[in-house]
Image 1 (cartoon, rainbow, N blue to C red):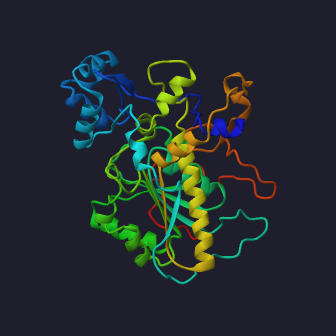
Image 2 (cartoon, rainbow, N blue to C red):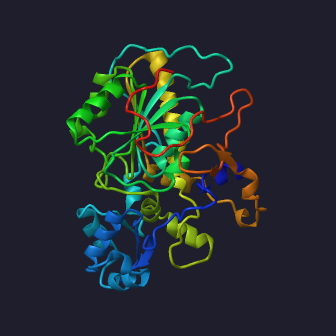
Length: 384
């Protein structure tokens, strides 16, 4: 339990420095009638929220007190709705999103009747996902954790980043075991490169907003035509159905929208919402995505077909809340984090991070490639 808990903290250091997990303006803020949570880790999200609040000029000059003062003129749900319509990522502290999470925790849907495509036999000493090729078109945490987990069990995982989009510092940790290439889907030549990569892949993982890749020709149905027998794994914030299906969102915002911050406050006897101490929705969703990808690969080998796996942060939140709470959790003895940290090779510097929590005697999880900065590798599958 301690190993799993610490892996889900995402704690790591590079050259002895532990990066700040949150930007100064990220977090819960009181409004006129409740609370909203603002995600400001990316500058364009921060700047958009500030513009809605009428806070112009140098965005670095504003403090949380300025944001909270401006929010006193807003009702929480009104600000949330206005921000969503402007493409910003904000969530109000209310349980509305629970109504959108009445779907299974994880869904596996058959797309077509493609023939079975058995993978190469795996020797007893090899990791179980040897020779499985995974395209990882994700950022932030949940999707990258999925890819990192598959890489830990031997898969060839290629992280695809746009050269124009920012990343968070955790990429040094979540890229363990992966190749990392740049592909710009606004460039026709790069679209062709991605299509070629798909033709040689077994799994395609993406965390775009629902429908975001469809218009670019990479819907699950399109992918199945390019690579019959492929397993597509899709992550969304609020599920693929319902009024909120198209909304952007991150772990922290879904915590707020699904009532987890209220529940955490109740556990500590507080009135104001309290963030969870870890991004557990991201980590749980990432592990479920990896599980779903492997379950779908087994079905493909046995039944044939191309498959679509879907996971949403809101579904994960609903499931976690249903598990209940350990009454004595706050009294449990603390485990020394430093005893669990391991050193890993890295293209970012000296990386110290948590190992994968699951332990297998014959095929212990390991990453055979160091984490490297985006664009280090060419967008092509290696020979071996």
